[in-house]
Every structure is written in structure tokens, then in C-alpha cells.
Image (cartoon, rainbow, N blue to C red; front, side, top):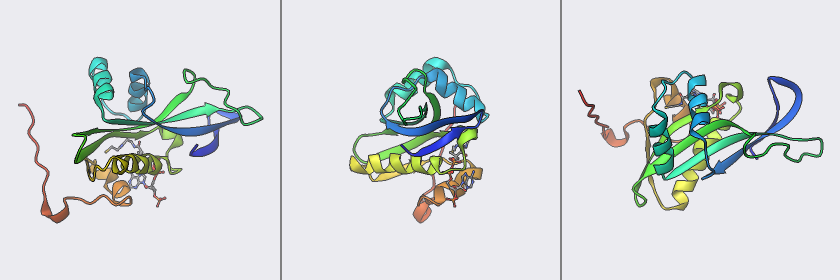
Length: 162
Ligand SMILES: CC(C)(COP(=O)(O)OP(=O)(O)OC[C@H]1O[C@@H](n2cnc3c(N)ncnc32)[C@H](O)[C@@H]1OP(=O)(O)O)[C@@H](O)C(=O)NCCC(=O)NCCS
């Protein structure tokens, strides 16, 4: 459990946000999350393949809780509020993709927790070269967690189909 909070859209309703690594994540819910932050829609089948073939999929789920603090949600009724995934050669390298937190839950440390948990999970598997691509507006977010832009002058290079 990362946070106990209230649901902004349902006053008085208590809930908590739980982190899971490797839990099944529904592509339709990921699509909905991406749409919420304005990312362009990707073909559903390709998104499903990307999730299935990722080395690691970390997710944040909103659970409604009752007065006793027990979960009143089932995995089916939980809301997906965050995601990060990593691809890897399973030995030396991993790249983090699709780091996203639902705008309603941003600004309370969830994005940082998500990325830190992913990095920790990779280090536990002795994968020490962790890379990612950052939009200009989130460079600072990653820098705060120890990511560096082009360390030692190593420049990423890109090839796009024309
Ligand atoms: C980027 C994102 C995942 C951050 O999630 P979040 O839950 O709001 O982040 P946190 O609350 O954990 O923030 C951690 C720290 O980073 C800072 N931060 C968060 N977003 C930032 C941003 N866009 N630029 C600079 N700093 C940022 C916070 O102020 C906080 O700093 P503090 O610890 O000094 O208070 C979220 O804004 C998001 O989903 N954005 C849209 C998708 C996106 O752009 N993803 C990145 C793809 S490269």
C-alpha cells in the first residue's frame, strides 16, 4: 500500500493505492489512462503485445476500502491509476517505458514510487544499466531520482522509418 486517500470524485469514500509488480493489466484500462494524459491512441493489439512481452509491468491500483479497512474492491473493480513497464535483455540492460499516473492522483509521490520500485526490481535481478526516454517536461522528474542526461557524453541515436 502506497497511499491511503479519498476519492476526489466521491466525497467521503476512503480508498488506498496499491503497487503491484507483474499483475495482469488490462490494455483497455491502460488505453484509458493514456487518453487521460493526452497520449495518442495506439493499436489495441500492439499495446497488448507490448504489455505481454515486457520484462516487467508495474501498476498502481485504486481500491475502495470499507470502515474496517478491508478492500471493498475486487481486482476487476479496482481502478488502474498508474503504470510503468520495462523491456530488457534479461542480463545487462533494461529500458523503462510508459510511466504514467492518473492526473487525479498526480503530485502525491506516486510517480516517484512507481519508478523507484521498477528500478529496485531491476537491480534485484542484477540489471544495472537502466535507460529511459524522457519528454523535455519530465527530465527534472527523472533527474530527481538519479537519472542523468547523456552521462559521459554518450548520445542516444534514433532511426525512424521514413
Ligand atoms: C510524470 C508523472 C508520471 C509524475 O507523476 P506524479 O505522481 O505526479 O509524480 P510525483 O508526485 O511522484 O513527483 C515526484 C517529484 O517529481 C516532481 N515532478 C513531478 N512531475 C514533474 C514534472 N512534469 N516536471 C518536473 N518535476 C516533476 C514533483 O514535484 C516531485 O518533486 P518533490 O519530491 O520535490 O515534491 C505524471 O505527471 C504523468 O503521468 N505525466 C503524464 C505522462 C508522462 O509525461 N510520463 C512521462 C513519460 S516520459
